[in-house]
Length: 429
Image 1 (cartoon, rainbow, N blue to C red):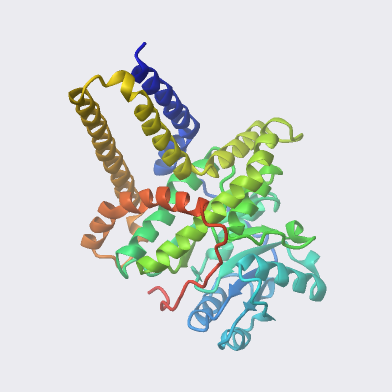
Image 2: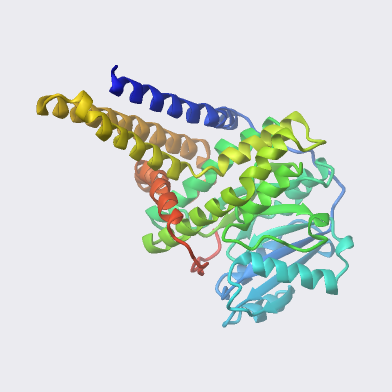
C-alpha cells in the first residue's frame, strides 16, 4: 500500500472541501465587479440618532460633526449623540460646542467601544424617547461623511421597510499617507466591492464592519449587548441568525482614518483576530442551528446564515493546522516510503516545488485581486500617486497572508486588551 498516496488523497479532499465551502465568495466578487444595487429616491425622511464613540479624539471630532452638519438632510431630523468614554482631553467640550448631545463615561475596566455603546444607549433610553427615532447610525470620531450620505442611507433604509440594517461604502481619508494606509484602503474597498455588493445584489445579507451602519431603533429597545473586541462581528452574526437583513448601500460614502505604522497595524489586526475567534466560539453553533431549525427564515436568509458561519471560521488556524498535520503524516510514513536518503531528498524536493508553485499562484491571484479593486474604484481613490498604488498592490498579498499568522497567534493569547488607535488626520480635501 502506498501510504504517501493515501495521505495526499486525504488532504487533497480536505482542501477541496474548504474550497467548495468558500466558492460562493467568487460569485459575490464576480457580480460585485460589474454591477451594483441602487435604491430609489424617497421623500420620506426618517429621524435618526447618530452615535459617535470618542476616546481622546479632540483632533478629529470637530471635523466629523461639521461634516454631519453639512449634510443635505433636515437638521431637525438628526440628533448627534457623542459618548466620550475614558477621555482626558477636550473631546466632550468640542462636541458640545458643535451641538452634539454628550454623555461622559469613565470606567478604565470597560475599555472596548461596545461598553461605550451600552452606556450611551442606556443614557438615551432614560433621557430621551427612543420611540421617536426610526434608527441609529454608528460612526467613529475619526470618520467624515459626504454631503449626501444621510440621504442615501435614508433611501436604502426606507426601501427596505425600515427593518433592515444598512451599511455603506468605507473609503480612507489618509489613503495616500504611506503604504500602510494604502493597504488598509485597498482592504476596505475590497470588502465593499468584492463582498458586500454581490451579497446585496443577490438578496443575501452582508455584514457590518466597525462603523458606518444604520439599524432600526427597535434593535436597542433592551439596550446594547455587544461588548467584546469585535462588537461588529457579534452584531452581524446575531442579526443574520435572527433573520434581520443587512444590506449594502454603495452610494453612501464615508471616510475613515487608517493606521500608518506597522506596530499599530499589528496591534489592531491582532485584536481583530482575537475578536474573530471569540465570535466563532460563541456564534458558530447558533448560526448552523439557524440554517436548519429556525422557523420563519427564507431560503436566502438561511444561505446568509451559512455565509456568515463560513466567514467566521478561523481559516488561518485551520490552514496552519492542516499543514502541520500533513507534515506530521509525512514524518510518520517516511520510514515506510523513503527507503534511502536519495528518496527522502526527492520527496523533500517535490514538496518544496509544490509549495513554491502554490505560493507563486497565490501571490499572483491575490495581487490581481488588489489590482482589479484599485482599477474598478480608481475614481474614489483620491490624491494617491500611481507609483504608491502599484507598490501597494504588490504588497497586498503579504498584507492578506498576515491573517494566517495573526489568527494563529490570537489562538494562544488568553487576554488581549483594547487599546486606542491614534487619530489626527485633517479632513479629506
